[in-house]
Image (cartoon, rainbow, N blue to C red; front, side, top):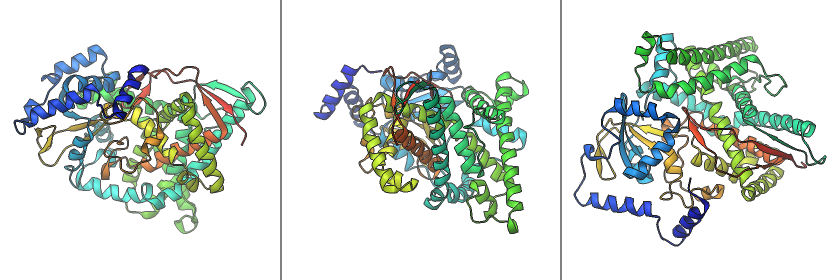
Length: 513
């Protein structure tokens, strides 16, 4: 990472109107290209034309776990656009907002992103239906519009927000009891240093189950269920085995009974088994309700979809399972990063807390009003995902030929927006190393905040995840002050999501409520 003195130097250059050298180099390069008209696709800089040789190098050098750093370094070396072939996959990679906007303007009515073929092969071999994550075209659109009514629109958020708030409050109550019992220090300022990641994973699973299935599973007890521990293990194993399988033919590995494929498929089988048990209980609850309908209480997204009756039971199962599998690590891990950044930036922490306390008092405990009055919480989430994007790319296949960085990119080409280099680029963000939630206060994001994707194909669980993270941070800031012993930058690794190499240990100190 860039040292502090260089960071300050870059900040001064930006504030005085002087652009850093990398930006000037990119501009000069673009100006040279513009002089001769639009250039051919084959002229886009590339990392090597033979995808299989590139793949072997990736494995040999251990680059899969550092794919985000590889992208950042490649942009520095080749400029703001490059082509890459890995095994059977080829893509054009971009990172500047002007190119991102052009890409999204060419996505068409049915935006298509890269299919995670290992996931699709698992569904096909097990004869499971596919959810919207694995679908494309008109079938995707019809299912997605039905799901949006239950998880994306404002009325849906109002229904599930109290459930998320219940879980966030219980989590903080449980953690506070633990700190007060096992911590050290004065009675009103007890402190305890711990790795919060196991607790955050249990929080995310408990919150997801409550919203999706309408039931709690009691993960804040002293002895969490074996079922929950198996589910968390299965999600982690599924995510870890996905990246290498993206570049190999899954059906060949299946025929060869390759251990990597067996591990991947077994993890998915555990995930589906967990979802199946919860879904069956949901059907039983609905059938035993008076007249086969709920009594007006929110029955979870599952209950809402069942009552609507517009998706088949198989499609409900497929989509609920995808939401569960995609809603634990992808929420728990950003929360680790957020707590770490708040802990090592005490001035930022105090500013956010002051806004949270004022908003909470004015909202009289109403979670929706409390979040509306504390926009810095949303800024904390955006800033965390800028620096540590859960998924490091957003992909699209343009439906028409487009021009990116003065190169023609044919329709149907896989184009990847690389979020890690984007979020840390001084060409896009002023002082990018600084954790500053208030930078998002200005209206208009200009294709700079894309951790949940964009447009009609953005993450279907976005509203659940955003509110889940904001509510937990709200209650943690009300209950605790956060500190860390070291403010050194966290090293990160990539599986299918971005993770800390070693989970940060954070000191939680109780504060008066």
